[in-house]
Length: 196
Image (cartoon, rainbow, N blue to C red; front, side, top):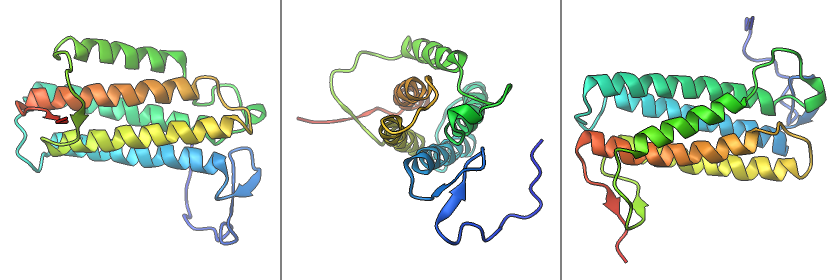
C-alpha cells in the first residue's frame, strides 16, 4: 500500500533523488531520465484517453469503440507505471511481487496490433501526424516512447535493467503507430500522408 501524506520533502533541492532501493542518485542520471521519460509518456497516454472520451474536434468514433479503447489506454497507463517501477529499482533491490513489465504485457501489445491491423489497408506512403487531435497525440506518444527506448538503451550500457523493458517499449511504439491509423479510420478521417 502506498501512503503519501506529504508531497514535498526538500530532499531533492540539492539535485539528487532516491531510487526505490534507497540509493541517492543525481536527478540527471540516465536511470532517472529513463523512468522520467516513461512518466512523460504516461501523461500523454492520459491525454489521449481524455481526447478519446471528450474529443475537442468532434470526432465521430462510436461509443462502443470509445469504451474499448478507453479501457486499453487505462490498462496501458497501469503497465507504464509498472515499467516505471521496473526502471526505478536496481535489479538487486527487487522484491517478490514487485510490479514489473512481464512477457504477457508484450504479448498483449502484439495481439492488439494484430487485431487492429486487420482493419487497416497497406501503407503506400509515410504517415504524418494529424487529421484528428487524437491521431496527433498518439504520434506524440509514439515519439516520446521512442525517446524512452533510446534513453533506456543508453542506461543498459551502464547498468543492468529488466530484460523486458526495451522489447516492451519497442512494441509499444509500434502499437501507438497502429492505433494512430486506426483511430483516424474509426473517425472517418483520411490519414495525412507524406507527399514526395
